[in-house]
Length: 144
Image (cartoon, rainbow, N blue to C red; front, top):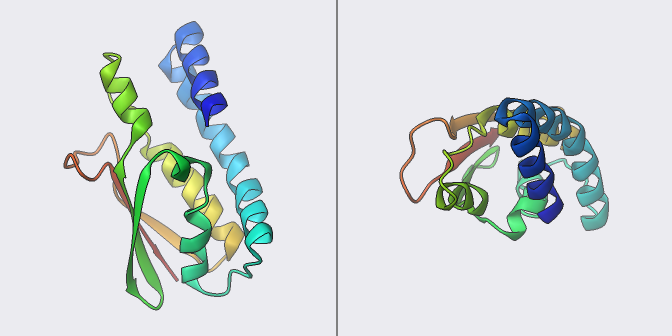
C-alpha cells in the first residue's frame, strides 16, 4: 500500500496529476486480475457465488487501511462502501483536491469481479468526483 501511494505521489509531483492518473488506470487494469487470482487461490474460493466475491474483495490491499463495509442485498447482489478513505483524507490534509478515483475504481473492480466469475458485474453508485456524504466515499453494487 505504501509503494502504491509513493509511486503515485512521485509521478504526480514529477509529471502532473494527469500523467499519474493515466499510469494508475493502466496499473489498476493489470493488477486486478492478478490480485483476484491470488486471493481466490489463497482463500480456496471457487467464485461460484456472489458472496465469494464479497469475501475476496475484503482482502484487497486497500482494505488494510480503509474502512470498507459490505451489505448483502439479495442472494445475487451486495453493496460495497468505503466509509473511511485514508488516501483521500491524506490528499485533503496536504491541501490537494479529492482524487477522482471513479475511473480507476471502475476498471479495477470490473476486472476483479469478472476474474472471479465472468457473470459478476459492478455498478458505481458514487465515487469521487461524484458528490458524497462524509461517511461514504464510494459505493459499488455487485450483482449477477
